[in-house]
Amino acid sequence: MADDLVSELPTLRLYSGGPSVVLWQKFLVAKGHSSGAPDGMFGNGAKKSTESYQRSIGVGADGVVGRGTYEKAIADGFDPSGLGYGAATDPNDPASVRPAPGFTPTLVDAKDRGAAKLASKHRRSALRSAQELDKVDGIVLHQMSFYRKGDTIDRYADVPAHYIITQQGELAQLHDHNVYLYTSNSLNATTVGVEFAGNFASTSGSFYQKQKFWACVLTPHQVSAARLLLETVQRDRGITKVYSHIQAYAGRSNCGGPDIWASVGQWGVDVLRLSDGGPGWKKDDGAEIPDVWRTWGRA
Image (cartoon, rainbow, N blue to C red):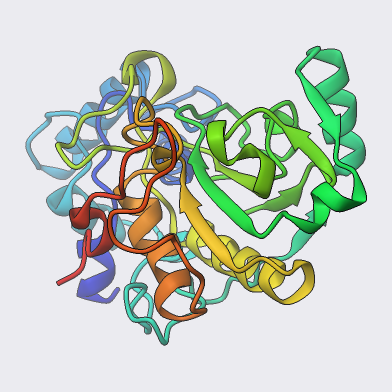
C-alpha cells in the first residue's frame, strides 16, 4: 500500500463519522473485535472495539485510528483503497478534475423525492417566474453540519437544497432551479444551493456539536461530485458565479468552511473561471471569504 495513501487517511476517534468509519467498523467485525452493525458513527462501542484490536496487534490501545494502527491493519488485510485517498493526481492541483481514482460521479434526478419531503416537512418554498429564473446565475456552497446513518440520498432528501452530495459522493438534484428555497439568506433570489453531507471542522479544528452531529472530513468522492456539479451547472444552466454561504450571512461563519471552499469553490474560480464576487465581496449581513480558506490544506 502506497505510503502517501496511509498519510492521507483520516484519523478516526470518538465522534468521527463517515465512510471511513463504516469501512473500519466492517474490518473490526471481520477480525472478530466487534459484533455491531457498521453505521459510520465512531461511538464508545467502536472505540472499545478499536482498543481491543490494537491490543491484538501490539500498538497502543488508545482507541484512535492513526498512522501506526493503519499500517498494522493494512498488513493485516485492511484495504482503504476504495475511499479515494492516495490519488495519483493531487486534489489541490487545478488540473486535477477528479481527485478520487476509480470513482465516476453522476448526477441523480431525485426531484420527486425532494418535493415530497419538502411538502411533508412544511418547509417554505416558492416557484420562480420566468423572469426571476433568468436572474439565477450563481450556486452557493453549504455544509449540512450533520451526518446521518446510511448516508444515502433518501436520508438527506428532506434537506432544503437544490443539490445534495452525500459523504459517499452521491450527487442528487432535489429541486429544479425554478424552486425558490429560503436557505442562502440575501443570495436566495439569484442562486441555487448545494449541501454537502457532513459536519466539517473550522480553521481552528473545532466541530459544531460533534457529540450529536459527528465529526466528518470532506471526502475525495464529495470533491469529485462537487466539481462535476459546477461543470454541469455552468455548461447547462448558465451559472457563472460560486459563493460560500458565509458571504450572505456572517452568522454561518463555517459554511461552507475551509475544506469545501479550497477544494471546490476556489477550484471553480481558478479552473472554471466562475466569479465569487472578488476579494472582500460579501452581501448585506454576510462576511467575506477568509483568505486562509482559499489555500486551505495546500502545501
